[in-house]
Image (cartoon, rainbow, N blue to C red; front, side, top):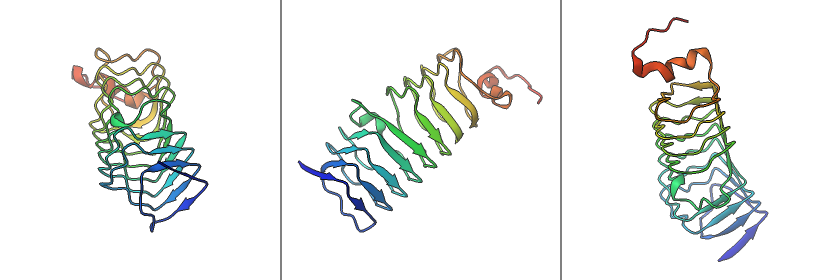
Length: 185
């Protein structure tokens, strides 16, 4: 497999399987591409489209996704060994994080509608200005996670580990909604 380092790629980039190290991808289209078995280390993705990309055994280590479209992205199929990423202002609707360890993960300004966090370890994760409409939290570890600035989440405290989770008073309906309570603010 080729090793490519310290390169800047733009929208004219044509993907090929390789190990990319310290590369920047700006406005690249990875949609419907097979990224399987490729590796991205210390890379930055800006304004890239990853919608429905195939990512079986793809490695992402110390990467930043900024203003990227990752609709339906299957993070659960990536190589989870040393997986680490930061997400800023990304569209992560319908993404799957099923069973991943995402301790201290930071999501900023992301749309995460209908994302799947089932059985995911999100201890100490931060959801800052994120829309979690219809996101799935099932047997999820949210210990000390910070959802104070998250919106539209629904988390069943009986089916998830929420000890020490931080929420704003306005977010309490996201924890108590299943009980049919009327909460005034």
